[in-house]
Length: 199
Length: 199
DNA sequence: CCTACCGATCGGTAGG
DNA sequence: CCTACCGATCGGTAGG
Image (spheres, rainbow over the protein chains, first blue to last red):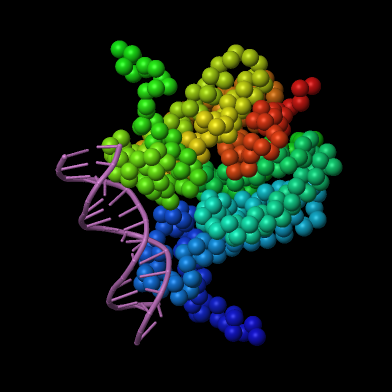
């Protein structure tokens, strides 16, 4: 029953989840290779051998963080894509959803690790991530196609998609929440940079 | 005299330069933290203690690679910015120059290390890099201003500049020389994505 | 999940 | 630039 999985959520300690979150924060901050098991253990007040009760290897922690990041972004943008609004409004909602995951408090460490540390994954896991990413990017390709059919954009090619995702993903390098701009404002600005004016 | 510095260029071995190039390639491939001194030494056929005859620390090798990357990109784009052509042609030349450094054989390892491993630099060196980057990005800001004055673009804000550089820098993640597209083609495509049609 | 530990590897150095 | 080496640290494990 679900009862054993979700009791009083606040009480039930989830040490595995704690480790994944701590690992995500440290991987995002210092990089996978420069983060030690002792860093992660210390962040969740464990001894250095204890994380291995929850994960077989350090690599498995990276895998968990990256897959969590990919799943969260995919879910957020997929939902935004289904709102059934106009192509322009849908596109803006997708931009907001993607940026919320990259820049918001819940998702940013997972996203940053996904974007910057995936090369340290084993080839097999990397293939797993690539497959998810292909599915994800296909959503954006479709959004571009819809925008073109609506006459809002001139170029819906693959390269256009890659430029768009580059502009989005690079925000991780410069966006600061205290910089006076909200994520929604950033999304709107990119939208109006790419789409024809509302006329 | 310069004679002692530049004799018969081909003969004169430059072991320090060899180390910087090898370090750049390895840092770009595996990341700074995951690259060992023994990797670098092996790549230039030295014993593991010998690189320290040329560099005091591993960190100093990273510094050399990153500053070389920054200097090369800055020089290439500065030259493209000074050709005295139309705003559109100048902008395209700058795009090409930036992408040539990121994706071409000579510069890509330095550039990739600059873009992805700078966080491992000491704060003092990081400040040095940031200062150079600010100067560099100011060139792009000016290019956007010129494009706006020429009526070729609607938004020449700071955020627009960051989106542009994001689209450019992200090419490192997906561009493959054997993919059938030249760097010049990529540059032109980004240009026509951002600027008003030639009319 | 802790205690106690291991073998391997790391950046760096002394002396030549 | 090599030889020979050092202390520190790393990921991971056995046994409880």
